[in-house]
Image (cartoon, rainbow, N blue to C red):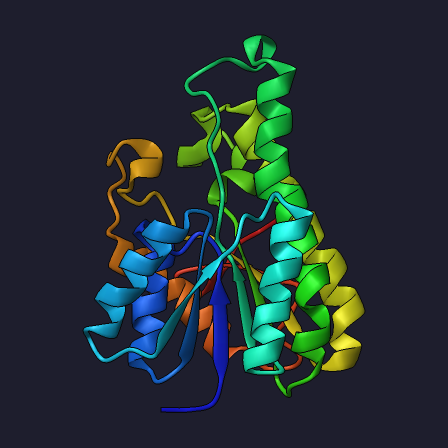
Length: 241
C-alpha cells in the first residue's frame, strides 16, 4: 500500500470501475467518482471486499457545486491528489448523420466530454500541485484522432459521428493545452484511447474487454515521466492527433 491517491470520474462501472480495480491492486488509494451516490457506494463496497482501499465520492462532473464539494472532501481527507483520471463521458444519440444531429445533443455531449474535464482538472489543480510527480489522464478515443478519421485506410474512417468524434478531438486539444502549462509543475497530462470496448456505452458491441481498456489507462497514469506529456496513447503506442 502506498499513500498515493487516485481520483477516477465515472468509475462506478465499466472502464472506470476496472481502472479503479487495477490501480487499487497496485496499492493506490482510490477515490471512486460517481454521479449517483448509491451506485458509487455499491461499487466501492465491492472493491473494498477485494482488499482495495477505496472511498466513494459523489461527483457530477457537469456541476460546479458538485465538483467543488468533491474537492473539499479530498482536500480535507488527503490534502493532495496524485493522479486524476477524467474518465466520465457520454456518446449522445447514435447512429445519426452529422447533418441531422440536433445541436442540443451536441452541446450535451460537449458538456460532459469537454467542459467537464476542464472543470474537474481546474478545480483539482491545487491538490495536484501539492504533490510530486502528479499525472492527469484524459480518457479520449481513437475517434478523436483527425489523422485516423481522415485516412481512408483506417478502420475509424467510416465512423462519422459529429458530436462524439469532435468532442474527443476537442478533448485532445484540451490535453495539449494543460500539458503545456503544467509541465512547469512537473505534472504530466496525456490522453488515452481505451479502444472499442464492450460496455453499456456501446451496447456491449466492442471487441475489447474492460480489462484491456483499463490496462492502457493504468499504464499511462503510472508510468509517465516529466517529459512524457502532451501525448496520445493506445496500448502504450503513441497515436497521431
